[in-house]
Image (cartoon, rainbow, N blue to C red; front, side):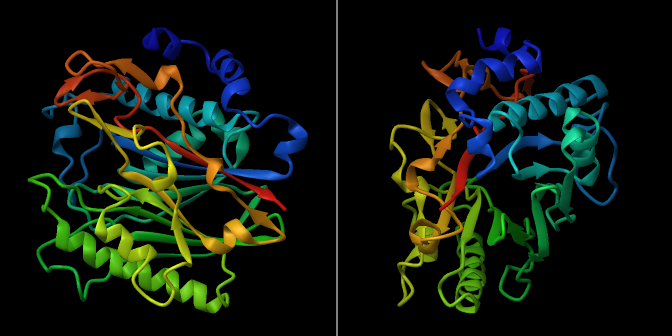
Length: 342
């Protein structure tokens, strides 16, 4: 059934999902914005980048990654974005596991997303495979005042390179929000694999968030999102939201979601590596953009899921299962949060 739904036209798909996942009316949409985070699962083009290790995603590589598969992948991400938006696609989109600016331009200019005039924030990261984090924003609604990529070369281990942390200060609906996008090192090789690196990046993230909070006199509206490759209760993530006299300034909303849900399924068990943290002021402010814990949710329509052939139950309909091509969307589900004017 999932493959059948995936084959529907985008227009039909959007109509099917509006009642369940969309913003309820055009009037309401005018007073809210939607932010999406999505791990796109290896969004590589088919061209060889001699500066990175992208060989497996070449036509002659181990995955036999060709133009047809690449275009299907681009269209799959596009369909997900359109369906997640409701009446119109999200105003801010944070993505990870994107290879380069070209794949982002193919997504925003080579599909019907070109109607929405998305701006792109992207820089190549030092990751050996060349995968990056990026931010897309609708230029008719969002103004990017400033952005930066943070990479603490003084504290990260010399032999280890990973994705930078993206920071963007945005003006939206006469208000200011600060967005951080992360993609932390994975646990490949065991639970402790990459642990020290994640701690170092968490320290960097905490310092940058504290700096924004201090500059805003603890009234800054901050959103920290990404694939952290650990669960919400992990100590390394708790070091961002607690552990000092500023321990109530940041709240991990993902930790408040149903413990049986998740954005990624590993050996039949749902996990929550993709998360969203907000400043307390974004929840408690009396004017401007604000949000509530229940406004964060996992976007999990039927077409993003399939019946797992190994572990009973539904799993994300991924592009790959190991090295076997499935032709799905991603092995992660997206996160959505709405901000509304109070």
